[in-house]
Length: 291
Image 1 (cartoon, rainbow, N blue to C red):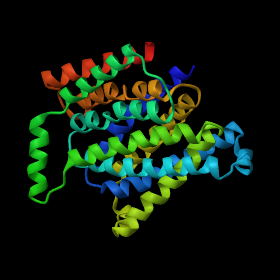
Image 2 (image 1 turned 180 degrees about the vertical axis):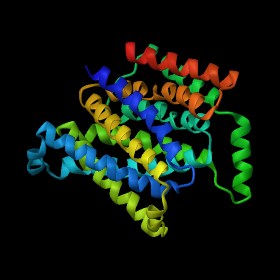
Image 3 (image 1 turned 135 degrees about the vertical axis):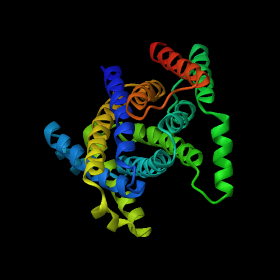
Image 4 (image 1 turned 90 degrees about the horizontal axis):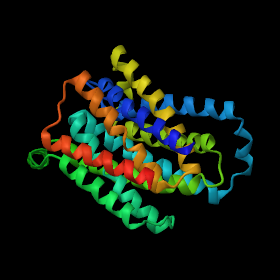
């Protein structure tokens, strides 16, 4: 059953990227993140009430809350990086870099969660890494570096930061929900993300931009929040019952959903190199799920 939850997480995560891209055409990414986090927070606490896990709050101690809080902080950092990268870069370029968190997560799961890795699984990880490498266009990275020298925003660095913090999120999240109902764990983490997002908006004096968001973009931002909330609920339910080294790669198959929608919605096409990388990424991920 946890594998189905992981697949559901992948689908809704893929939809999230497209909806978010539609919602930040003219809206600042930090402002958009702050707004959509409110939607995710409401959604997650409604699920807590429906699941009846509200009563567990009284039994949570520091050892259970700390990993959840740290996981939420890592998620907030990942979100801020990811949506900034989405705002200034193409979806098909940003998403593969973000998905490189798969490899790092598997390594961290091996070290901190003592999840063993067999030779076939190691080969599958190598295939995933090769696929990600092929999907990252060298010319884009070079151009990104030139932009940085000129003082412009660098989508590649933001995407890489998103991948790093996403891997920390998975490990800390796994530790934090070992004895906590997954819906409640998601809601607690979202509170931390909300605090981070609004703090960043306040520090950069962008809170006032909320009232200037076009209605159409606001709709897409809210829908992306609903998709994110659904993805999270599936993801942490899968993490609670299944191994992180398998759940995370399956979740990263969201790239398939993203690539498909980006083609039809934004007209973004994959190069032959990127298509070959996507094939390797998919094959490696499926292999890990079956091993």
